Image (tube, rainbow, N blue to C red; front, side):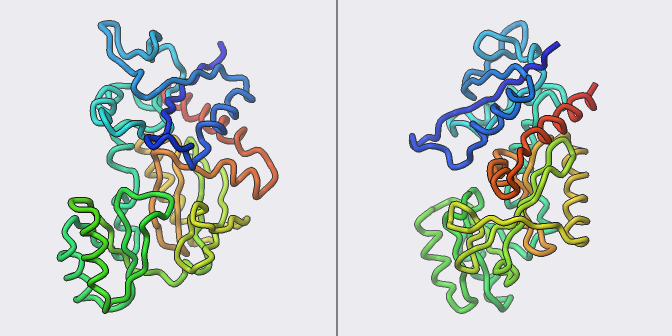
Length: 290
């Protein structure tokens, strides 16, 4: 029987095209591999007396459901609650993992020294007790937006920036000079390392491609591989089937489990199709749940 995958894809709230091209590259990869591919909006998920459904089809009829990102903010928690009841590995990443394991606050024990708060005075107090440069960034931010480097004696900047976003949480993280040598993104699917590439910043700070960083081929060092393998094992144990692990040197920056871009970049950097490897690893991931 031909496997059938459902991708949940919603337009960017602003109406602008999404910066991650997962909505194009991932469905295309599964179609090339012979899967039946369906697409729908996140908000099309609904519950019936017969069970969860999407656009009139029960979710149990799909081999896999793959949300591309969080979808619209309105109703997000309701949507997560609905999907939480799906069996492990029927959803590429568990709903609870998308909510709790995505981003800068997860796996904090492996990251650079960090403080997280919605109150600027709390972060300023941390700066006063620890010398050296810091990086301030929105906890829910992405694509390198709002990330700034702050010297220990410029605490007023913290108050200024956070005052523009009242009640939002920010991360104050120890600045890593190694960022000048780049940030490594490693894509993991079904517990397998698909590939890694290096993002080189042009300003010794922003290693996001959306911030004009350049992508180049790289090989994980022995120390990096130990870190990545540890995270990879954690992902598999939590039934997280697709993620991106970002590292600077041997320090974890964050783990993206909501919409980890990078497939098209891997394809371009190495001039090969990594989509086939993602499909193969995903297939094994599903079989492992049976």
